[in-house]
Structure formats: structure tokens, C-alpha cells
Amino acid sequence: MPDAGPLRNIRLLAAYDGTDFLGWQRQGRRSPEAGRNGAAGKSGGRTVQGEIERALEKVHKHPVNLTGAGRTDSGVHAAGQVANFYTDIKSIVPERFVPALNTFLPRDVRILEAAETRQDFHARFDARLRTYRYHFVCGRHALPHESRYSLQLWRYPNLELLNAYGRLLLGERDCSVFAGAGDKSRSRSRYISRAVFFIEGGRLIFEISANAFLWKMVRSVAGTFLYREERKTPPGDLAAIIASGNRGLAGPTLPSQGLFLWKVDYFRE
Image 1: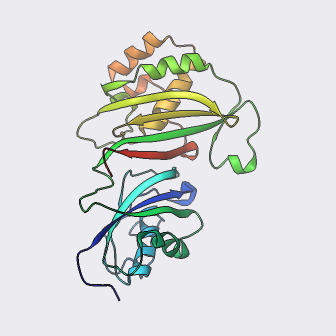
Image 2: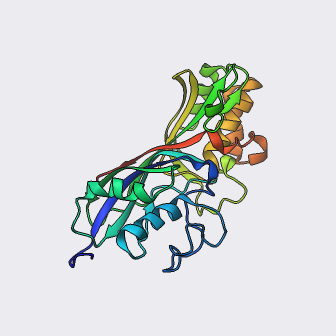
């Protein structure tokens, strides 16, 4: 039985293969019936938040709400998703939530770490920077296991030009040109601290860090940069396109399978 007393706030680090998920966010409101009916939610599809909340309910014997640092879209993966929940269980050390939850989670979701954090910690609102990585396999056939986690490119792009594009984004700026058509953000201004392309482990990686992102923004940025690099668009011309805010002048939105929420940084833990 849960112990009496104040609730503890538990911070989780999670990873998941987003291929078979609608995304992070649970569909519909959380209710006591949600766990008994499975993790699908009203839409009938799987979500990562729904799966973890179902595991939390099995551990706690009652519904538990989970807050995530970022709402990854359908098909997007995570290597460093941060989340938190409040627990009334005092009888186990926080680290034991790792094996306890993994026992009830499907193979495409894993809890990597669990630790008690301050009472007012909020995984979403306290986040300082979110870092995403998009993975590419260049100039060769992707191996079967790579095709779920990277995009096939049949050429080797010009890294110098791509990184010149990346420097155009640094700082606080209006990112409307990269917003998905359904984006509902009140403000489209974002602070971007890093936007670079590099080679790691034989793959091309695009890494971008910002305080927050618009809907489909990372996939739009990566798609635009590769589209413009292939056409040798001068950085000055791309700067004008970005300033215009006209999505139709930029470039395509890449598919989701190469994108990972890589890590989340906080001002204080």
C-alpha cells in the first residue's frame, strides 16, 4: 500500500523508438478508466506518454499523470526525453522505478534513469534547451536496421555550405518560415543556440538546440537546408527567405524516422 505523507517528485530519463507511436502526447484526457482500457487513448493509437502512464498505474495501483519535456510527433524517436511524476510510494528508493516501470513497458520504450527532484520541478516549463538530432546515411545503401532511424541520401552534401546556413539561425528570431501548417503557437519567435552538421559514426548528423520548437520545425529546417544546398543557394539568399516568413519559399519537410529528441538541459535540477 502507498505510504502516507507528502508526494515525492520523480524525474525520469526515457528513450523510445517512435516508429509505431502517434507521438509522445497522450490522446484525450487522463481518466481512471484509461489504464483498464489500455494506453491507446481516444484516437485508438499508441502514445509514449500513454504507455508510461499505464506502467505507472500498474506500479501505483491508481492513475498517475506524467509530464514530458517535449511533445515529439508521430514517428519521432527519443534518446533523452525527460519527464516527471508525483508518487505516494515511499517504500522504494527512486532508482527502483527504473526496473519497476520497464517490467510493464513494451520493448520500444525504456526508462534509463529515475531520481527524486525538487517539489516544484516541471519537466516542460523548467527546460532551458532542447536538442534534436536528425540522422542521415549518405552515399551508400542504409542497412536494414538503419532505415528506421535515418534518412537515405544518395550524395555527400557540402558541409561548409550547410553550416553557413546553420549560422543564419543563431540567436532570437522569427521562425515562421519553418512552421508546420497546423502550428498553433502564439509566438513563433525562438532562441536557437546551435545548428550544425557533422559526421559521426559514418553518418551525417544535423544537431539543433533551442529553447523550444515550432511544430515540425526541425524537419523543416533540415529539409530546407538540404534542398537549398543541393541548389547551391547563397547564404544571403536563404537569409532573405527566412526573413520573409513564407514557408512556400523554403524547402520540404523531411520524414520523421531520422529525428531524435537527443537531450534536454535545465537551469537547475
